[in-house]
Image (cartoon, rainbow, N blue to C red; front, side):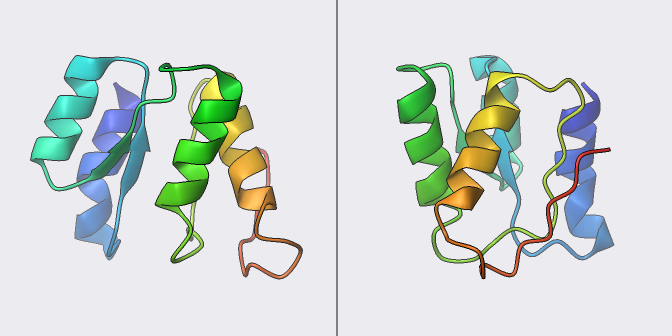
Length: 95
């Protein structure tokens, strides 16, 4: 729920593009309907999740990755970001 709220509110804070990754297809549908780019990482395992997320961020590195629970989605996100090499411009930190 908190991730969905963050994704829906991000444009109000200046986000030009929101990529949402969730295991719940209904929640993804709502986010897609609100204009977000959605990725369903539960489809075909971690390699497919990593590839889907890498494709979603291939044009522009994200300014923020938010994950409220940690788990397979986050692991795939950081693996996808790591594909861009050391100089992607992404500043990643785990809090």
